Image 1 (cartoon, rainbow, N blue to C red):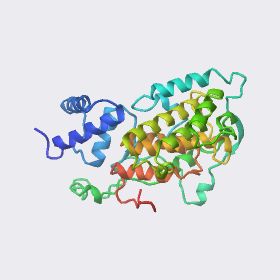
Image 2 (image 1 turned 90 degrees about the vertical axis):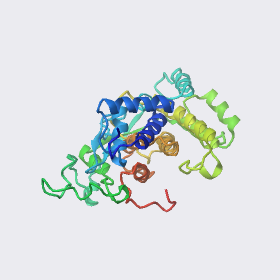
Image 3 (image 1 turned 60 degrees about the vertical axis):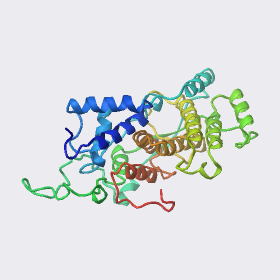
Image 4 (image 1 turned 180 degrees about the vertical axis):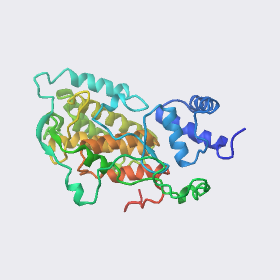
Length: 336
């Protein structure tokens, strides 16, 4: 028998989310949920925070608290390739793109170059503290033996998250080197970003053009959504745009070591294609209901560009709101 707080509806919802994140069928995901429940692996309460925790458990992910009841992916200690980090593997199309790009650039033109230092000390002036340790009981105000006043509250009334917690980690990390990605990632000036055939020809000439793959992703989307969050994109177009973004990221990651500990600031134009591809990919993952993956990608993006020129922090807030972990967070001006 299901507990009062864990019904078959909750488990079905969890299975749908697991299926979306892992690209497996719903029945396979539901079987995994039932097996985990029978083994006592799932939280007793599958509200918004409980569902999120249960999914992370099923995906066997590391996690840390961002609030009294809110978990998140750990803040990165370096950039690890997304090709091997997400619950669902990249497409065969992305693997082929990476293979083609890997056959070029052996002259050293495919690597990053040092370009200054990122110093996060300015965050002190914004009131950010470098304290990052957090225990889930730290924020609880009720005495031992007292009932938690939020115990039976509606999910919409529970503000779980510490928004912008990522800034604490940036400050705690201290200064980091800045690097520029190779200029070959940029699209050749003579190639139009709205010319699909021309973009494909450009990739035949230079398979490391991250910007060309990103342009193909934008062309797969309706014009009104090319710079949006993909929330109103038909399924086939969304899948195509995601595949092209995976190509852009897989190719861009070839320029990085297996664990990259420097930053890639937006202020350097050579970094624009890869950083934009990460932002677009996270937005499209959110539109596809792959919120766990979208959160992970957004944190990797904030690690690479902690000055947050693209406002990835706002995207992270939207993702966490979609998860139900900060329901009190205000919508942005586009209602996203």
